Length: 557
Image (cartoon, rainbow, N blue to C red; front, side, top):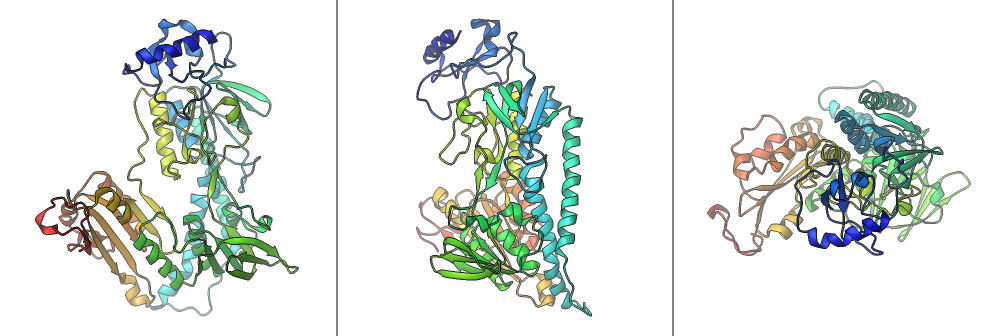
């Protein structure tokens, strides 16, 4: 049979141009790829060609033409499950629940719950719920009260003594909420009829997963194992903590060094600064938030500095040293900063693909260890799929949810849905927070050439009485040729909430004229987005004909 399957691969060159219009999940189909059994093949093959199983026989659906290794499937071609998902984070739970609701027999494999992840611990809900978005946002809320108290003084509030914060209470309350959410996720899966298998899952072959020494077979396997925080390999790295530990420390840091300029590092800088810790942020480059709009990057750094955060730009960590009194020192390319109670590395995360059996199963990985998938989230092994951070596409919880839903609806629901990673709105819960959707000014220039940029930098109403130096920056990027809004970026109070609504408009393709025709809500910061009438600058690089009102030369006007 293996030889027969290899022979059919050659036939694909003849049938390759004929794509039969049927969903990828269709029963009694066999997938034939031009790279079948080849020693060298692309990491991801195109969507395979589908041929009715009667061309080969009734048992064809139990085999794959994408590999010459026969799977460990029961003699009658049956499986324990139609889908086994490894990883019960956002993407895994969404995919498993949707698949079960569509009639599939589904199991999900997840490690036992713990607030700090390891090779032996995880928990239903995954990174976002246990050691990411949810607990982080709870700590952001807790840390913001110090700023609220400062603001209140300008509104007539006074306090007989300075308010005090108890770290232990915050962490206990946070952990109680995590345990509640653990029960919610368990109920969501159970109510959908999903079997929960606790333990570490490992792929044995393309249709088999082993958990705690027991093997389970599945027609399809979905990998949704997420990522893990990493610490660079420098002397003394064992003294550092990551975001996992930072969310569950037994005591609040008195002085903390945070390495990294991305959103994780900056969010924790805001949290600990708001709670009263002395915060130093060490950044290899000369700006925060690489990849975000340049004006937003500069504005945020200025606002965070005004709130008391100490930035050390163009400083790379070389070593961590621990003194006899237990305090830590961070040695960088520019010198030594001493007396830290904690040093946190927020320098990135890595796909959690080690010891999953992927190499043995032939699943393609990129140079960073991420699982390579096609536009439908399928790997080069036709029965194995992957969604979420483990694929290192757009590493955000809502994106993992979208990918998981698209997978289930395509494979089990008869639809043809590809995850859409264009114009994904994002928020950074710094203090002040950032919200954005669409292209940055820099990327818009690269793509369109001719753009108009509208900006406003203002003092919000609350700051007029509080007396604090808080400001808000809002920015709209417009394609000058079509008047279409192609990017919106903002930094200031409530900006993430505003961005969610604006994202709908940007994805709908609205024009700047439609923004202008919208009646604002007064008094709000958000109304600024519909009252910016005059471009701050016009950029003309392509020399294309644009509406008369915005005609300019091939330069920044």
